[in-house]
Length: 405
Image (tube, rainbow, N blue to C red; front, side):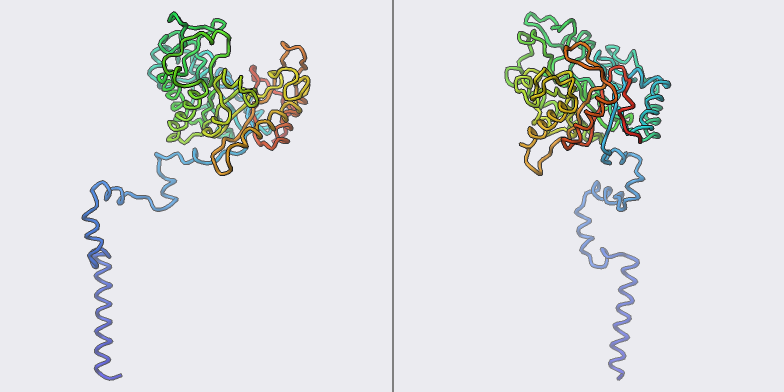
């Protein structure tokens, strides 16, 4: 190699070395000048965000302000209903947890806001505290309950009774459904709050948010409807009722609830009459549009108790005596109804309520036990559904009808 070429090589090596050292010490931005100019145009707020940005999944999971567990999809749920009172008594809740641990049950629907309007734990909701709705809490250690359910891998669902709230209606008449003369409307002595009143919405959602904060993974609205008594034909629902139908306002509440609860990382479900699947008359009376609600909810839970269907419904002569046939027919009707929602669009998962009680008040009934329970579950599966909830007002369940864990 001649001396001229050697000098050229040495010069190149020196340049590369000096450049590398400069980059190491001052960085890419200073060497090329481009990023320096860009950084001058970035606001202090944006620079702060960049500085604190999280770049790894591990560091994301370590952020204490994010409860990432709430974003995980729940497993296929097989749930039982639990009153707030029983959930708050260690002896009773422990017995129900034992049932869950020994069987296929993996979730509990627990009263947070009951049919009477009582809130079952000391929720920090000013309006509720102001009227005394938290004065009879059944669950005194809500955090202990949540810990116990988590330790036993039981998915907690908060049952929030929305518009049947006699306590709130009596304490706050401005929230109540009214007669034409301005007095509180009562159906069989029970007052309801007005679904057209947006202040009622906020009250219901404030309680729901408190339930999410203490650890419930799903908010389930019950009585998300209007009263069905004949007296409702002459009530005063306010000026908004002149602009929107019952089904429109209930659907609007459903959509609003989804938006409001989204930041809390919970799933949202709603209980609906089973008959609205096939009866527009029933849907209009209660204000529940099955398809439109399913367009917004994560889960829709039709109450398809065989005893609640009239003889001959969906071709079933005596529904309570034919639990498998009744559930299969109702859930097939549900599938057909929801098929109008195009593929690719959001559609709620259907999770029916099944009957685990004896309806001795109807003419053609039978005692319900393990056999009748299993027939309903099988009807659910044969309709292509994977999830269900059992309703027993007494919280006594037909364990023999449940599969072992």
